[in-house]
Length: 468
Image: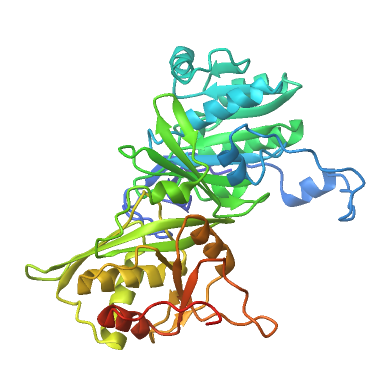
């Protein structure tokens, strides 16, 4: 029998190649190839089928109630998880180095342990004394959680199999765990995939919830193969800047809750503190009398959030004008600028454009188009927007303003924070009558972006009240 040759596996997408090459043909990434020994072959499909046993099929309606969730004691984390940790589930937490992954998990593990549950924290990056130093800074030294430092998968699995009453296990991080049966180095595609699969299998067999900490690449995605995100039940990303005190925990996948849900935290000297009202936090330093600023009423998961959109236009010094964007899609900004020029008659092509979402939040929904357009028009005309107004609506290529979901929730959040006006798409009546807006909130329904531009030009157009 011919000897099996080693293969070269892309560390970005997991594609295998027979020989080394500088660029992966599957994902197009450069310098991501690593040499790995092939996995040992097992028995063929026929042999496996012959030695298998019949699987019992059951109906969708079960007689036993599902197990209760495990609350972490941190309301913002429970919100992102969908109400708490589900027993026998696997959660992957990713983020930049120093963003607060280990801090929030140590805090959550300590609170779960304080509630009387068995919690195991396995650190592969730090020694036990280093974790104790962080716990002392966070005031968690009295927590009954169990701590260990290990990187060998066999040792971790053998220890977890002896724990009969474990409720939560934290592995920090999965890139440091290695299996001696594989010749590749820790953190490679084969190691991450094999170690994660074994830990998740054990968690589902024993019934404890497991949380895996994952590193991210320079592009901001989780290191290792994408299959790792498919193996877990929930994937959470920590967003924010280490120089900024605010941290945002976002769920990009959740089998037991809403996707794209966010939790907002503030980094302090004693750890991460949850922020119950993020809208007030994002607007705390807003100045309403400055041109180029507009308030967007957005939806993050199930929560309405108000954030400030800031735009700045300056004459280009020559060459191609700059388009600098922080917290939004640069391609969508280019589209809006083209619509303002082609459909509304504005001349913006010779200006450098800078756009920023204040507070460190990243906006992905198209409903921010109208708020961004309002900030751009305000900056171009040097006329401030109404300090008591919010904006939301999707803009099409012909300049029309399209409907967006959950308009009522956005309006309620704006009224709760004291805003008195809202510019939004024309609402479609349900049952012959559009829902009434919150008390004290005037609505300016617009069908085309040119109406918004005309309002800044005339300065006499005021939002009308609904039904008026």
